[in-house]
Image 1 (cartoon, rainbow, N blue to C red):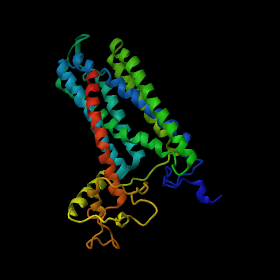
Image 2: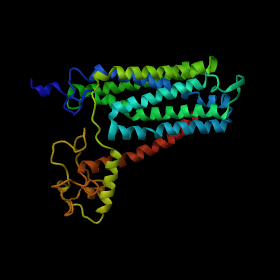
Image 3: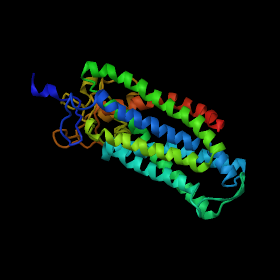
Image 4: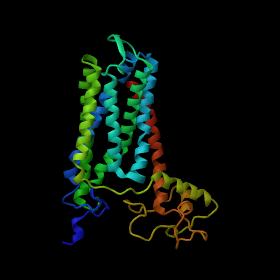
Length: 349
């Protein structure tokens, strides 16, 4: 057996930056830590968010319309911040360090949230169960904690499932089959966490105290972080491959710069790297497709494109890069249908 057979062939490395050993890293040795992390994180998230409108109304003394608006603003922020996490993971930090960084922010936010409901001075003063009079400072502490949670959950949201997928080498047929099973268990763990949160923790908040109602999610998130770091030596890591947002913008800019350039009938003349792999780290080449042909102009070589030297990606893009943009555009109609569903679903709170 050749020495290369002991290592993954998808470019992943171990925690020391060395090529990942097939037998010592990844697959089901590493995935339980990721699944456990996700289960506890979802328990923490849904545990503190499912009953949030009630807290706004009865502890922060907000009108129903104001409480609902604040809840929706926060929820929307939770789904915008993943853009930050995805950008940092792809361009600079990699998935492991992005999850690690934002998990710490997450725990800090959850801890501050629990303190805002228990610690004298930052806890709203209540005359009866549903009659409280929070100060500006007390409300500010709560909202700072709340938006730290939004930043934390958004930072790790786009990374965790992908990080689980990184533990399986697609060039290995056996591991490729196991990847599907991972996603089954991954989403099962999400639902287990959500079920416990929306039943047990909501009951605790309504019948025991908000201190415990926010404290238990904080503990759950701390356990999630412990789960994640415990598997560090077993993880396979993809190196940052550059920001996909930058690559998409490069195709758009290059296409408009060459808007008067004709696309050759022979599509094999379009620019692509000579290597077997794509110039996007961790990705394979993508074959050309005929639709959205305007963007093919970005891959047309002209006299001003000196490909023997360093290629200016804002003037000349590879076919794979163009196809990456086309794939995103094809997904937009499906993405748009989710807006209607999300608007209706959000009213459940």
